[in-house]
Image 1: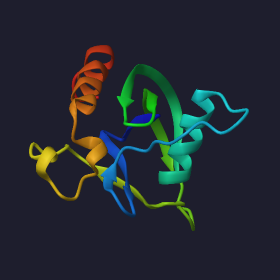
Image 2: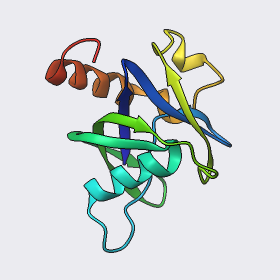
Image 3: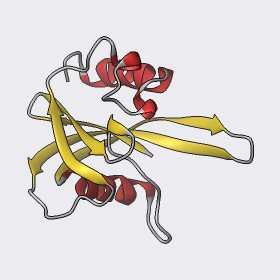
Image 4: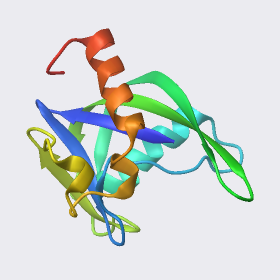
Length: 132
């Protein structure tokens, strides 16, 4: 799953230690609902407390050996908690605007560089207004 986050008129990303800047995301743990996993992943990777969580859509990645289907959510964050450990990430990064050159910007994860982000942001703007 992938969670597009807004906190105080800024995009809330995390800096993955190996991949770079990206929106929080991850996998559902056994016995966990997808919404619970989304809230957990945002907190683990950024310290963000989710106030509202909205389902945006789903996308499929077909690999050589497996197909992965991921949900995309939009989360409104009410608070950022400073933590000692953000697991595989370096913690929260607040961005006023995503760069126009994101697809070639080496600071950003490959996860941010395909059409999933573009379409997801369009859907967020359509549902919740431009400049959300």
